[in-house]
Amino acid sequence: MSGKVYLVGAGPGRLAYLTVQGHQLLQQAEVLVHDALVSDELRSLILPTCQQFDVGKRGGGPSTPQAEINQLLVQQCQQGKQVVRLKSGDPFIFGRTQAEIQALKAADCAFEVVPGVSSALAAPLLAGIPLTDPVLSHSFTVLTGHDLDLLNWELLAGLETLVFLMGARSLAEITRRLVSHGMRSETPVALIRWASQPQQQIWQGTLLNIVQLTRAEKISPSVIVVGEVVRLRQFLQTETPVATRNFPLAGKTVLVTRSSAQSSQFGDLLIAQGASLIEMPALEIRPPSSWVALDQAIAELKNFHWLVLTSANAVSYFFERLHHCGQDARSLAGLKIAVVGKKTAAVLKQHGLRPDFIPPHYVADALVETFSEPASGLRLLFPRVESGGREVLVKDFTAQGAEVIEVAAYESGCPAAADPAVVTALEQRQIDIITFASSKTVDHTCQLLEQALGDRWQRFLDGLCIASIGPQTSQACYDRIGRVDAEATEYTLEGLTQAVAQWAS
Image (cartoon, rainbow, N blue to C red; front, side):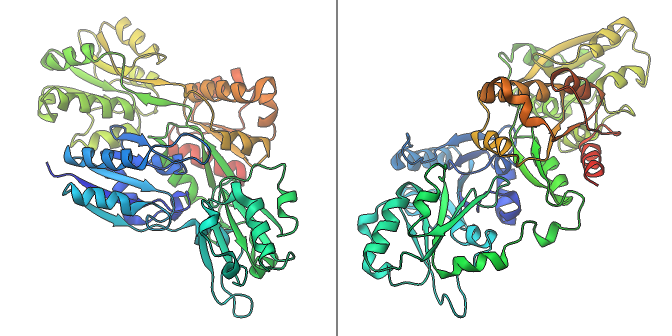
């Protein structure tokens, strides 16, 4: 196999600002090597089988040495993998891409660079600050705040507009040096934190007072803009993008709790209705503790009448293991396939197969109630989540005389901790709607929030719309949160999107 490394610019973080080519490459990646500031929303595009490496460099914290990153890219490429090296912003703007390219060329590895929207451009724009103006700014300069001693401060103090990346930790020293070299202390300054994200924050002041204004705030990571153009923000900023103003979810921020590998389609549906997204995956989908049972079942496929698949994860992991065992879809020629839900059927179609039966209601219980033939005497293979799944399907099929062989195809667990950015967004009342697509996401979300916020966690859900994909998930919401504000009438992601849009209208 011939491997290739794509050095892709992730843009400022939102899926909406990722290039079309970047979007396509993420969906095809076998290996993802990403920076610290690359969002869950972007990582949601990758396949469940994609191997991920977090090599982000964090100011003041442990970082992966550049030499190790270079070696990782070379090794994965030489194994014949399609590798996406996802970098925040644009790869050639303070992205250390040159070192990685040199290592790839030295190892004779194929590579391609894909541009991205730099936060140096996106953050000021999204804050309503033009970097150029016919009167106030005829040029702008982009700098890194990492090593201030390398900069010509006398020259910088005479320029019209400065944009500092990675400079929040050095804000006090940046302002001091500019003023000491002749820049007016009244010069406007803006800090834009989490540009493009729903939790975006903006602080505005002057070289004289911006440090004092932000002293009690967490301002990293931020883009710093210095210059008279900052004053134009009061005339040019908009709270809601024009493109989404007439949609039901315009101006609404939705917290999505699906696993990062599953949230892409749902996110697209919400964005199409004008929503801003923030993600806190409350499920981690991973391999089961053992493949033994599934491998044995695959070796005995000819002894089953039906293959029952109740989730997209079950389809993906079953076929991954089928291929691992040296077989393909032809091995299923003698089997009928039953699936639950449109999404599960769509993933099955990607493997060149169509289901023989889909229940009219997209829940596992309905499959038993409406099954297409008498269950007595049938032998059913049921690849499923290793723990915590629905037991009704197995119980009811068994009661009707069928033999159900359950095998673990994947596991779903609770992440170790909530994303601090999400916790901050909740504390600052920046979230309007929280969506749940399964009972597990309800339980895990509550567990994560209680872990992060203590006994007061429920207080931060007051006033939010609690949205559920169906009755089982709603029951979990009532048990843990005490209410449901919007429930899908069709138990699909499209139905959940529609329910949320109707609530907002």
